[in-house]
Amino acid sequence: MNLFDALNGQLRVLLTSWLLFPFLAAFVAALLPRLGRPLVLLSSAATAIVACTSLLGAPPISLALLGDLGVTLRVDRLSGWFLLLNALLFAAVVLEGWLRAQFSARPMLLLVLQGGLSVSCVATDLVSLYVTLELVGISAFLLVVLPQRESTLWVSLRYLLVSNTAMSLYLVGAGLVYVQRESFQLGALNNLPFGAPQIFLLIGLFTKGGLFLAGLWLPRTHAEAPAEISALLSGVVVTGGIAPLLRLADIDAVLYGAIRWVGMASALLGVVYALNARDAKRLLAWSTLSQMGLVVLSPLSGGAMAFAHGLAKGALFLSARQFSTRSLQDWGSRAMAPLALGVLWVASLSIAGLPPLAGFAAKKQLEGSLPDPWSWLVLMVSVGTVAVYARLWTVGFQVKPHDPSESGPLLPQLLAFGVLLLPLCFGAEAIAPVRPLASSLLTTGLVFAAGLLLHAVLQTLRPLPLPMLERLDQLLGGAVLLGAGLLAAFAGGLA
Amino acid sequence: MTAVRLLELLLLLAALAGFLGLLLRRNLFLKVLAMDVLGSAVVALFVLFAARSGLRSPILQIPGEVASVADPIPQGVILTAIVIGLSIQALLLVVVTQLARLDPSLDADSFDQGSLG
Image 1 (cartoon, rainbow over the protein chains, first blue to last red):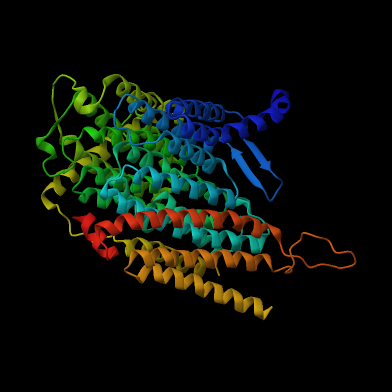
Image 2: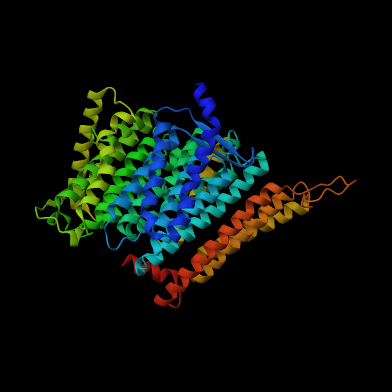
């Protein structure tokens, strides 16, 4: 107890320097490119240490820099999950590309992105969130566009255009909150009558987090980016918008209601479109949209869900480099090398929620923290998720000697996938012990059976006649439509 | 107070005009410019919010004057947003010039068609 009081002063200095480190390191990496990758690893290690201390039960630390109207930060258990995910995923991406000749992720941008994401999950005031989310958006945009391929030019432009528009609206919301409450703190939203300010803020965060209609930019952007960038985008960049949403859900009950409805809609929409996808990377990306919906359903389990999903989806997108085809039509006739196939199975089974993987524990915690009709809906989404990944499980097994010219050197890959998959295999107990185990296992068995059945039925029905939702005007219109819908549903009901 | 309300309305209309331009214009260059209109309207809105308590900037205390000064907090906040808006605008225009090599008419629909394949 007293030790913490005594260390409090130093703790503040330590935390501030930890947050500043990636940005300073980015300057160094720009001047001395050879130091870039070691610096990313160093910054990941520092982030992992901070994350583990808060996950292992250290009391939450709140920092107010420059007084009440300045920057406020809070390092707690919720941010711990996001920070650990951030650290592991960046480390894995750098390790995986260590000896690779063409590695498209520039360490300088990786450092800025990592710093921005760290701040976005500990910041508790609207303006710091705005700045870091824009920073995350710009660095993610540059990571996608810099490999200079024609196909990525258009998707990256779309991404920055949509995200900046949404963040402009977010800023209007922040201004409106300030006018009413004279404060930019997230806490100022507590008991604020639901109306335009919250709608604008939510549109910004939903767009950043890739949720429902506001997140329709996500599938194509994540599918077109190079493998290691997709892994970062889908695993951890979306959580920049998700973490603040979970904080908001904790602050105000009406906001939580709105976030929960949109999360569930997103989960269902993502599953339906993933079931209909023709391209393996697009299937993974639609599944991200769906899983992010599940993450925001409950602030209690959101951190662990995002953690388990981020590691698994990062591993899947990293192994997507070794898919011999992206088309799902002739997926069953193809074969994959043992390492890539193992990664594919473990990661996708975790997302589908198979015990004893981490995804299972996170999903059980989510179901346990929701009231009844909601947990039934989550089970439905789980059935859909099993059917989605069953499409990837049809790929065959191929024994051949490892060929470094084709799939890259072996050792860095083993390290990278080890970093991602070991926590998935052994982290379930750390998330939450599953009780009662027997009935949970029974439900999981039924969900898997139903999912495989759905998969078999859908094989004959595909392609389903679903509307195309991803034109630029639909992305922008979707975000506004979502805002209008929320206004009609929630503001009207409470007036 | 009615003047402030009127200004607020005008700024919201400007933001709406920017958003509609973004949505309805087919040319990408005009879309990017429309986004800037939206951004500028938001900046002006913050300046207006800051002027609720007074107009003068709180830099110098004039002896004997009971000054009604502007609120410095929204003004400070929006400075950051202006810088961010400028850099994003610049990045977008670079990509638009690159895209102009693929399709000089810069028609958003044609890029959407192309990437849908």
